[in-house]
Image (tube, rainbow, N blue to C red; front, side, top):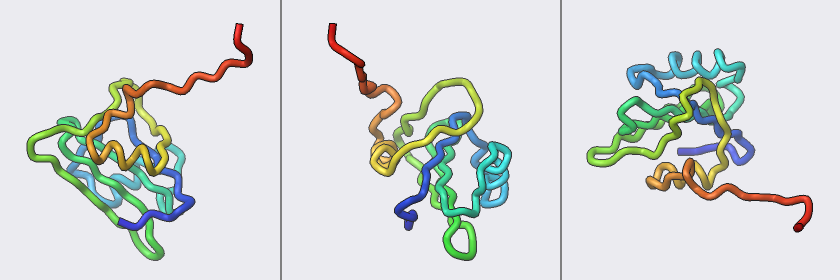
Length: 114
């Protein structure tokens, strides 16, 4: 899977109908106000959390990468809202390996120590 170095990675929070292919997934990105043909990456997960699809534009057409787990499930947020959130490459790699980044400790920054 080739992803542009400067690509933004968008993850759809709401579960996606995994019967959708290139244009169906691209339309979900467009509905969220994003341009699926600019080289950014769009990640979708099915309701069973067993399938992930990754859509991106490469030079002259859509590329669709998918992975289906046989005995496990992908970690996925349960925010209950529709829309996309952003990840970096390392976070996407961790999700594909099964690491639940959604429950990881969040970084805390204080203006000063009291």
